[in-house]
Image (cartoon, rainbow, N blue to C red; front, side, top):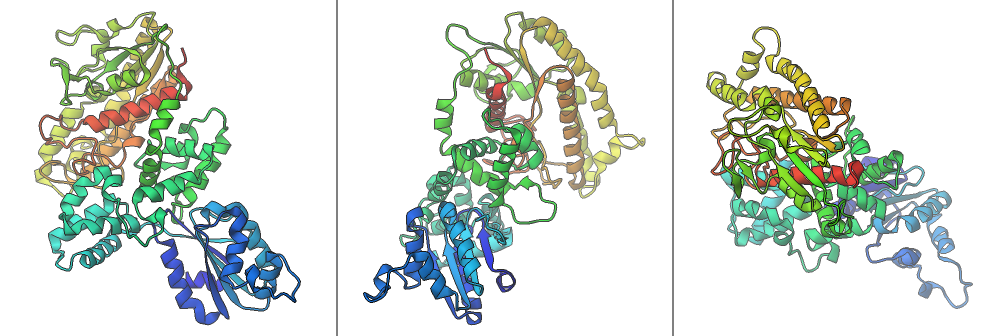
Length: 583
């Protein structure tokens, strides 16, 4: 920051609310003050567009009251430029995000007329002034956030101590808070009543937990909800819509994915991309090659979007009417049927009434026929599965919508994972599973994926023959393993550390094949992998949407839990809402 201020005339600290922009700017003022004739601080948080000039003039002692009766009145701009033109000065404009249209042209004028002036601004979005240098301030790393938590916890409770076990819990807590300093400080206030582990367990309702800040803090920084509400209110209608759609992808998403996945009928792709970039600019630290929305940023996006989710859902026009109900048929395997999720309504197929087809049908007011069944392969679509009739028998000419989740059992999901788990003890830090499946020089799992492709084509052809007027959605598989290739070898997930990336890649190949077959056969592929990144089986209870291999009763191993099915339902429903089917 000091180097940037010494080199540039306009530096803007950008970052999400509560990340510490104001604190950094204050520290920069202290360190650089000797280099200037004067440093003036202007807090614009309470100002409106019409009051920006008056606020700056007042901070510099140039308010209307400073003009003597014998002096002619001058406008604020003339007064400011006359005062600053002959000085090597730093003007700090704090909290500019809600005043960009007023601040940006004023800064341009001041810099143009005052050659020795330096402007330091803090904002949740860039000023977009020529010559502006951005200083992105990202959330803290785990270690830094843990140190801040410990320091603040000790201030709240002098008896607080952090041994090695406690530090592990603190780092886990800070990771779930995405390293946001304000959230970390709000959480630390609870150590007087709750152990760290209990604080983390209560984060599922983080708005309620992180709801008491310092009384002297600005209103927008007293609670986590206030921070997010302030940010959300600054967005225009299109930005709010884009943000709400990004809330689905809580694990992060690439710019390419955002460009194609976000659906706004009134905006073209270039406009959507520009809005996405504007939203992302305040969240991303300038890492070379970075082209995606970070997980931490998306969590904040999700929280802000969910604060208005009720209004969004209520305003969405239903696809069907009571007079012409939509006939929806759900086909597929256990990732559609929802084993282990209460309430089970079909013991033979391990089918839940809270699986994604049931949730989707309820959200859209559709008439559901759910024949998804645990253990189903592509063979079970056209042929009987034990006592169960062929799933395709549920289709007819009056079928309007079909979802199909199939292929995992053809690949041998469960058997493959059992094989991998059995090999772990031989080489727990290596990749014995990958070695086993590639021992003959070819990747046998990748070959199986290729072999399944024509079966998916045949299945889609059969669906089209039975339901010629239906909209068909091929629903992919959610993220089972850490997307970054990391592992979590444990008694609950007994896989070797080096095999997580291999298994992740195998699942991605399966999903890519399903997407390709859907596109080639007139169906729509629904990506449930990207929205579930960060909620894989390695995450702690409450955060994970996929249960581990050794799963707590009554959940099913390596399958979506109730939260996972809900996430899949939201993703499929969003794909439908974006216009793939209209009655």
